[in-house]
Length: 247
Length: 247
Image 1 (cartoon, each protein chain N blue to C red):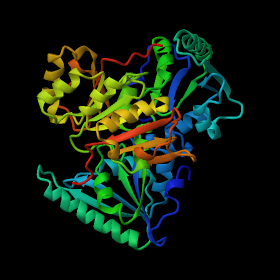
Image 2 (image 1 turned 90 degrees about the vertical axis):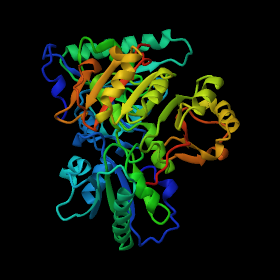
Image 3 (image 1 turned 120 degrees about the horizontal axis):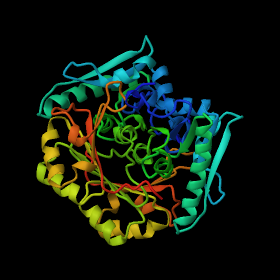
C-alpha cells in the first residue's frame, strides 16, 4: 500500500490486529475510495455507530461491500445532551474492538465523510491509538461534495475558507462570518432559522446555497432563500464571498 | 449513477459531451474514488494542466487508469506571477475541450485533490459551465489526508476549522491564527520561514505538525520544530488548538 512507510516498523506485537478508521465519503456509495472499498470487502470485523437504535448511515453507504460473514460491532449512541451516555457507548465499543484486535483480527470502522473531520471515529482513536496500530483512511468530506453538487467553487488562490458548526451561538456565527471569505456551515439541522437570520442580517443571503443530503438520491440543492423551514442534520450552507473561479 | 437527479433533465443538446471535473485525492492512487476511477478508465479524452512543461502530478496519480488510446489535452501553464500567460493556457485548453464536447465526446479533467478546493479546474468551469453539462466529482483533499497521516483529528463537535493559504501576508496570518481553533495552512512552500515565525511568535509551535507530500511514498510528517529549511509546494502545516478527540 502506498504511503505507509511511516507506520511500517511498528513497535507493537505483530500478532495484534490493526484498527482502520475508514472514511466513506458523503453518502453516494461510489464516492468511497478504492482503498476504503478494498479494506471493507476484506474485513472480517466491521464496527460503526448508530444513533439511538436507528439504522447506521455509515453502514448504509458501505452495505454492498460488507462480506456476508463479517462480524459487526455496533456502538449504539443514545440521544442525549449529556456526555456520559455516549462515553459509555464508545467505552464499550472500544472494549469490543480491543478484544477483536487482541485476537489478531483487523477491525474496519466505518465513518461517514472523513474520520477526523467532525467524525465520531476520533473518540475510538483517543481510546485505542496508544495500544494498537491505527490507520486512518481519509474520505471525501461533505464540504467538497456540497460544493460539487451546488456548482460553487469553494476557494481559489489565496482565499481563506472557514468551517463553522451550526450550533455555535448566534453572536459568534455573525462575528465569524463577517470576518470570513468562503464559509461552510455544517450541522445546520434545527439551527437553520438562527443561521438564516444571521446571514440575512449581513445581507449575504443572495450568495448562500443550502444543500441537504449531498450526493444521495434525495439530495436537495437550493438558494438559501428557498430553503425549507426544517432542515435535517445532514444539511449545510455554503457562502462564498470570495471564491472567484476566473483566472 | 447516484445523486445526479438535479442535473438529469438538461436543456443542452444531448449530442454534446459532458465535462467531468474529477478529484483524484491527495496523491496515493488508491485514494481515488470508485466513481472517479470508472470515469477515467472509460474516458476517450482526458485533460490536465502541467506547470511549465513539467510532468503533471494529476496525470501521475491517475496514470494506471488512463486507457492506452485515450486522447490527452494538456494545458501547459507557464511559471509566471503575471496572470495573462496562465489565462491564455486555460483559454486554449477550454477551446480544445469545447471542440471535443461539440464532437460528442465526454472529457474527463484530472484534478489533484478536489476540483473546487484550490483547484485549477475552476478556471475551466468558469469558461465552460454556461455552455456544457459539467459534473464535478469531489475528491479527498490534502487537508484530511494530512490529518490522517499525522494522526491529528481536525475538528470535533462545535469546533471551528480555518484554512489559510501560506502566501497570505505575515500580519494577516498572525491575526487569523490567533482567532482560530484548528488551523490548516496550505501551499506552504517558500513561505515556510514566515509561517514558522508567526507560529513561534504565538507560542504554538508545540501543537503544530508539518506534512509534505501526504500519502505519497516520499511523504514527510514531522513536528513543525523539526521541519526542514525548505518545503515543497505540496506541504502543509496543521495546528490544532481545539480538536479534542475525547468524548
